[in-house]
Length: 326
Ligand code: SF4
Image (cartoon, rainbow, N blue to C red):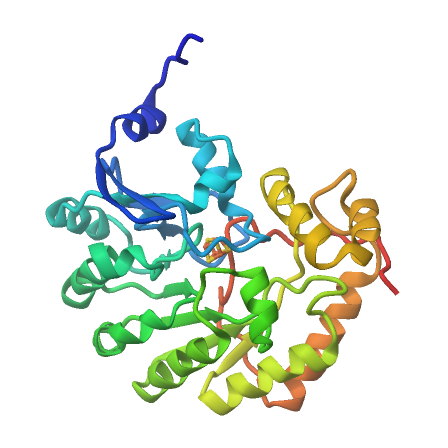
């Protein structure tokens, strides 16, 4: 079979060298054409995004970012979680890009892949970038989104960045407090209690922390009791903001999510298939129901303010819901 002619990022990925192999995951290095990417979505409060790694080994069943490996001609969505690319580090190039971002524009780290996934312990790219931020950056907003307790390793660094006239917010995603459910949904991510520990350490360091209870998935983690438990734990740990978004399933996510559903939630399969048969987004009053549910929970626990951009992902458009789960 003839090989496809590869160009751009696909060519760089094919030529990348293996840095390290673990039993499940292979790390590769990737030439970085740029570190800081313009965000094309005007609805989002940040104008620039940074993803130090391509691919994410946490392997969340609902992950919408798997399509990003398709740019490298890696079309099996499962490879997203087993072949991780670490961008080659060039401090001067990163600094030059950072200096071109205007003060009034915000930067989000971890919009497509987790910046504190296990690769960070090995390569430290996120920390290297934050070290540059701490010395040189003056931007109105810096948002970091992660599921990892490793984020609290950088608490002092983040506090130094915040002290340098930057508004720093760390969004920690916690979808459930149920350890078994979390293990099923996010098999290689840190346990919810470890993430809450990071919330507490970051909050104690004076960092603005938002807990993002997303995605909310019908018949899985969408009960008020479940969302309320996450919000209460977030409040107790010192989070200042709390938010949730409803799941959406683009084709790359569906290929992984539906086999998971068939195994773990077979009774829900038929309704999910009906709901997502012709669209990635739910339809019907469900969004309004969840919105009201989340608002009650936020009010109950005193989450009155919402920091701009918390928990936002690039694929997190606001869907029009026309489907009822009630
Ligand atoms: S942590 Fe985020 S990027 Fe990583 S697999 Fe989970 S949803 Fe995808």
